[in-house]
Length: 120
Image (cartoon, rainbow, N blue to C red; front, side):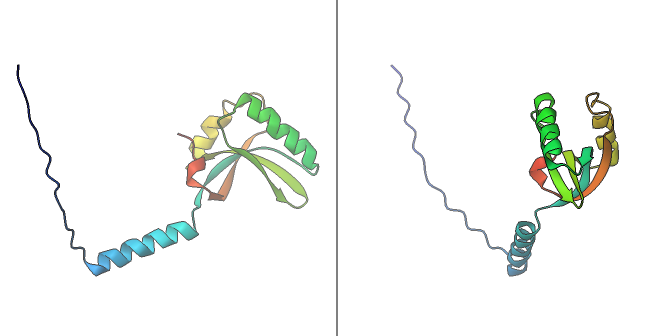
């Protein structure tokens, strides 16, 4: 019979960080908390003055693409259904090529995209 005995020793690590680095990290973190949006592109699927029509379009879109973020924005007098989140216009155009159910879709610039919305 073989007996193995092990013992774990706790190790203490001390990090001495330059105060300028600490302040830089704090500033960076605070800036990202206050402005959590990124410039990018979305695909505009439809626009209408009738909000209910756009809501219906959103529900229809979600049946085809349940994992793609979709929401409408109101820019008077239109309600606009915008979907996806892309870093470049080229990525948005590639997605549009898949949208056979929404033939009038086109890329739209968006300056308020949350990082979690970007599609991988």
